[in-house]
Image 1: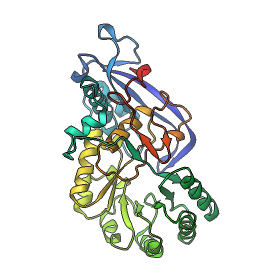
Image 2: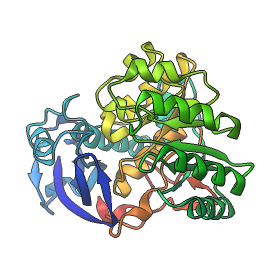
Image 3: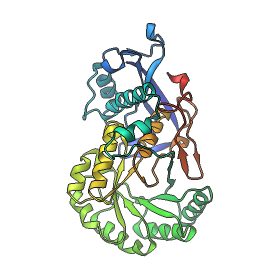
Image 4: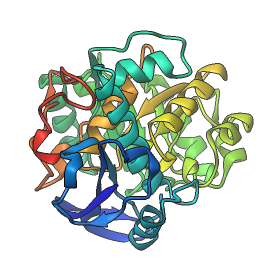
Length: 355
């Protein structure tokens, strides 16, 4: 296994609970031919593949503060060959690289292999995945204009950020968005900003707007509070809670109508698919999203989403948030969807420069 560290600038800083992030830093994981599964051939930033030639599989380990291990802990786990649940980004990098290598060896698209071997009893994956647009924190007029523009570009689902303003203004923003897009699937994302009283009032006040769900209306740890919000006319989505609770713990607490699944934070494509199946078994939906990853992990998330039957619009349209990337994107967003690249593994020959 060979590692290449990278740092990719964001077009705009990402505000998080741990402070602004101006770049996404991580490791490109390459598994060598004939030795990739052993996990004991680690080197740093080396271009020498020896007699084995180009790598057989690509993965990406891009930690995100507050969601995964630190960059240093990620590197240590990759160096030791011991990524586990405590180092999900490292495990994701290795898991994705192995899955890519297996699919390339079998001459299959990664999503087809994930579908055939995954938990859904489905031999075929989708050829394209619908994705949602995201509208940031603006005035009611700005929110309406951005929502209208997204629909005009072909997006059928739009997620609107809320929670940074007073609840009354957020209600105005959501009503403006619905007026601007009467037929779109609208979602809101509070990122855990509300308390229980505010969340109840907000869900009750917008129940007549037909919003699909509000993502993380309460802080991540408040599973009982999230459970109490269900059944009020607006679905409850859980995102940040999955950084500290397993999908099954969230579902057992009746805390979600929708699980927002980040393969990087969950530890790999296999764990994301297991969580999606757990959601389906519990009568909930699953939406696959990125952690603003580079092209390798974004493609991995796309393949995961394509392997989930009848998946809802997913949060995969994040490539434009990066000013730089590891390689050109072979799955751009067109008319509100991302087509799975043709060819074997992650993207056929489209990522040859990285192997």
